[in-house]
Amino acid sequence: MRPSLFAASLGVLALSLSAPASAEMSTEEAIGLVEQRSELTESLADQLWQWAEVGYQETKSSQLLQDTLAEEGFEIEAGVADIPTAFVAEYGSGEPVIAILAEFDALPGINQTDAPTREQVPGKAAGQACGHNLFGAGSTTAAIAIRHWLEETGAQGTIRLYGTPAEEGGSGKVYMTRAGLFDDVDIAMHWHPDDENSAAANTSLANRSAKFRFYGQSAHAAGAPERGRSALDGVEAFDMMANMMHEHMPQDARMHYVITSGGNAPNVVPDFAEVFYYVRHPDADGVDKIWTRLEDAARGAAMGTGTKVEWEIIHGNNPLLVNETLARMMDEKLRDTGGITYTSEEKAYAEKIAATFDDPELKIGSEEEIQPFEISLGYGSTDVGDVSWAVPTVGLRTATWVPGTSAHSWQAVAASGMSIGEKGAKLAAKTLTLAAIELYQNEDLIEQAWEEFEEKRGPDYEYKSLLGDREPPLDYRK
Image 1 (tube, rainbow, N blue to C red):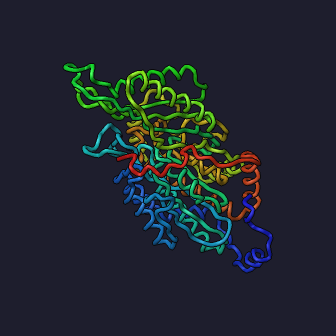
Image 2: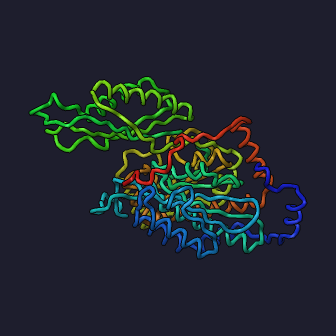
Image 3: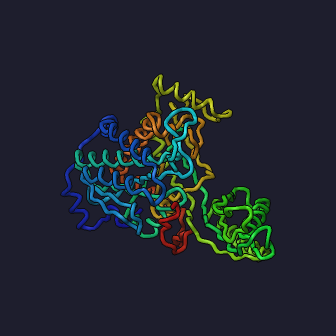
């Protein structure tokens, strides 16, 4: 447990004795605080979906959430961690300090209307293919509901909403963690859109990414090929060696890439080419070991093709540190809240979406269920991982998408822009609200969470960012 929490000093004791006694509020009444703000959730989710701003460019999206929270009496600190679109909104006073994370960035290169069939939006360069519009709206609604619970019950404590940009490859939360913004937080909570309802304790993979840039010598590809040194040759040689590495990597590791620049005309030897790599592994040391080999491959490719290479680390995330104490509590609250029920129109919509899947694991109807609690390894990565090594952290997932939907798909964009997605965001807001109330009222639970947290980190733990000391890459999506 954070040493200052409920300290037994006379000053804190006197403060607690003078605080007003907390009034009782039933689970139904607490959930009602979210239901009363149903239109707000929908409005926020829809506007963030329409804007679909990419990482570190979420100017309007961030401001909308800040303005909404400011109107509810939250104090706003904008531009934190040297990130213009990052912010912290706070209401209340004293301990415990409960944090809720809110994302809002979209994914470039994919867009879709809210129709259940493939229907792109002409000229739109990004879409909410991971449902972060719902993440931002649901978390904001939960923070506002908790703010009213604190006021109405007279309970002591602080609620914070962390506006965390650029989760998709920008590692916004890592810079916020590195800046110490979670140092005085007692518990952090988050959630994520999905095709199922679950508070299972899933870990994630640590990861690091970089753009490898090769520089050569341009020449006429037919008239003077001997004068050219192809930067694209460097990239292709590098990719070939990296692909050979796949055979000799740990089973749970992952490595993937995309060529972001390869030249403009076949008859011009390209003097610049770029490839963007991700490396993932269950722990940070594993990422480091594979990364060293990847850098050696880049050097070898440059040497063999007569080119030069340099690289820029873009993002890096530590794996999620699971807190089973908190996860079991969140699972209980999710079950108290229940699943999602489709209207006849939503079911018809879902059936059209499901028709585009090839034998999905989850079927329509599972959105009404809560998946079994388990502890397992997930193969994605998230910058929530770094937060989880700074403070005990817990999350959940709700069925914002039609069962069987994969993240980063047009089907996810579609459902994130209509009522099915909004229902999932409201379910998340209700569950987060109930979890926060439990934490404010249960000192022992926070203590147990911190005991598990400290045991898992170990006595000699020191935080290490996989980003190193680089500054936020504010232009990485430009």
